Amino acid sequence: MFHLDIYGTLVAATLVLLLGRKLVKSVSFLQKYTIPEPVAGGLLIAVLLLLVQQIWGWEIRFDMSLKDPLMLTFFATIGLNANLASLRHGGRLLMTFIFVVVGLLLMQNAIGITLAKMMGLDPLMGLLAGSITLSGGHGTGAAWSKLFTERYGFGNATEVAMACATFGLILGGLIGGPVARYLVKHSSTPEGCPDDSELLSAFEKPDTGRMITSLVMIETIAMIASCLVVGNFIASELQGSAFELPTFVCVLFVGVILSNSLSVIGFYKVFDRAVSVLGNVSLSLFLAMALMSLKLWELASLAVPMLIILLVQTLAMALYAIFVTYRVMGKNYDAAVLAAGHCGFGLGATPTAIANMQAITDRFGPSHLAFLVVPMVGAFFIDIANALVIKIYLLLPVFGAVG
Image 1 (tube, rainbow, N blue to C red):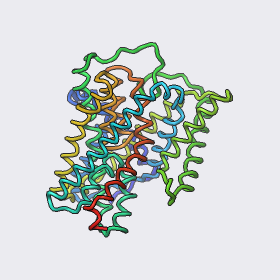
Image 2 (spheres, one colour):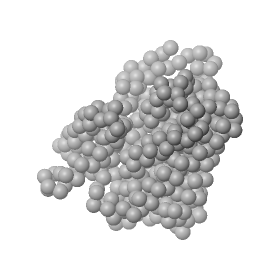
Image 3 (cartoon, helix red, strand yellow):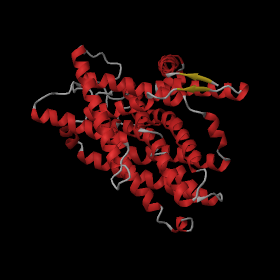
Image 4 (cartoon, one colour):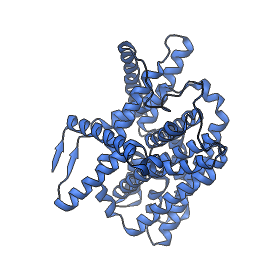
């Protein structure tokens, strides 16, 4: 057993990002299908660690103390860059995308439960392999698996949830690029969208040079820290109530309120370039840590029927993005980028969605609409919608017998 402390883990994460960049630039397959750099580097390291564990029995433990703060910092920057005035302009498309997302939640649970029943598995296992872990991620999976264990007596619910969420995180980062590339090539603008005079959103071009002073950086760090403090406080106060929300949602919401309130009263205007730099750094390091620390051997503990469910879910996500998300959202370049983002948080998490979209826009051009809609839906609305959909499914007779 080897243990890397917080500093060693940070060094490892940065090396993973540099490795991912080198891989994407050197391997034509990764470049062709626009695989995000943190996914390429992180997954390769996870596979190498799997081989080391299987051959020699060695395991490397990382100190993940920075992982959650980095994730929360990323969501704080999403909130600080959310302009409510711009959001109003995209209101109709935002509502349309929410309905598209809810449709996927319903489909994922229907597939999971149906396949579980067909293969003689507990229907709760099918629900865990549905929207709980795929659209909900590790956090939602952990919360619902605890409920399933306590209320329904599902003994290994936590292990199943973590394995399913891990599988989804991997596939969410792998299929978004190929799906979007296929859609872009078959859209009305097969060469993508040329850069325009409109100001790029914070995350569309992560490599764009940005002039930032030390004072601006300090002010931005202060705002992000304020979002983390207030967001964590709100989340702790809501815990156990009917209005309980994940901490990252509260942090994002505080960021939205803070930036827009300061703008309205004219006291301070958020410097989006500084916010975007810190947000992109946090996003990249979070994804690198999340993927390099994956214990892929835990996926081997999944029974073959469970793997079948997850593979079917992956195929269903790709088809849904192509035939529903892309078509309903307008069958254009923006819709293709939205489809890539939907693959990211429909199987994995919102950071994966942003990484998918960055890989597309960095190659084919900006998509202001996608970077306006996906962060808000993937980080905020989906958790509320998912909770309601899960509770509706638990009312079905098939779960009545279990409860």
